[in-house]
Length: 359
Ligand SMILES: Cc1c2[nH]c(c1CCC(=O)O)Cc1[nH]c(c(CCC(=O)O)c1C)Cc1[nH]c(c(CCC(=O)O)c1C)Cc1[nH]c(c(C)c1CCC(=O)O)C2
Image (tube, rainbow, N blue to C red; front, side, top):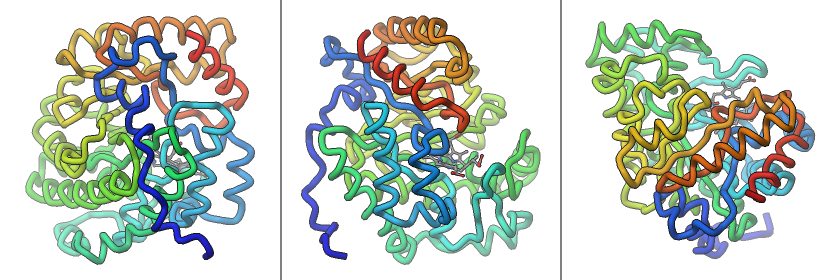
């Protein structure tokens, strides 16, 4: 390798002072005259032909450990759509793989574990989160350094999976609609559950911290499946561990987004886990969220991904409404209510970004 990547200059302060990062920190008033900020969950990925080409012949988790490839894939949607941030190309399962767990991501299915967690012995056998694990994160740090160097003034958003969502893949062994085994474990064996959730908080928290230390300007905690929980269950068995994961970056002064699908019934709890910004899916009205959350909290979202397949007229009308409603928040960043579906026409996203920037 000819470039001494680890000697790249530190991340541009312009990225950390960008309008998008200020909005995520609840400092939207400082940049009120600037165009709205927008990025999309899953903006990198199968909706882009250049992604499909770059990924040919390399498995998902393998590609996440190849720094040049990660940089290229992270930059693809930034180049094409002119979104205001890159989202680090990786996966919520990467920390498991780096910790030595036998996991793969099966195309069209999702994460699959060879040995799902089924007993106390399985939890006893989880590897320690130690210097060996932190050293294994080096390809992640390297990829972030390369990517932030290329992004220059645009921020990179780092992320990790929240303990409930990641642990539900570990317990179920594969994607599950209702996470029954996981939810049963919480109440049947709360102490075992707590050990598993704390372990995930530690591996995911270290993964998140590695990204910020290497140059990411904001983070998002994905608790995609938390919406399947009642608020009381969430508070008792999940919130403390999500907070533990976010605590890994609390001293690093970057905004923290917290997102889960279908969490409109417990937005305050999602915020209390340690977020500066609450991510909203398309079912939660922005004014309701602003009213519910403490003053100073920013919001992100929340265009229904179905609108990507609707008429341009309907899509732009919704986008304009979302931008308008977001102006009353301490900070608002436009996003979808969940990830970009693989079938999306990329031109629709490019045109949508241009429209949002004109508002
Ligand atoms: C639940 C979850 C996972 N991974 C993730 C979540 C939380 C977000 C959410 O709720 O969608 C997070 C994730 N996964 C990926 C990103 C990176 C970048 C981005 O958002 O642009 C992020 C932020 C890449 C990816 N992660 C995955 C892909 C597709 C891989 C491919 O090209 O086949 C990408 C681009 C694979 C993946 N990984 C996972 C699933 C369910 C899948 C889809 C499996 C499939 O339908 O084939 C687990």
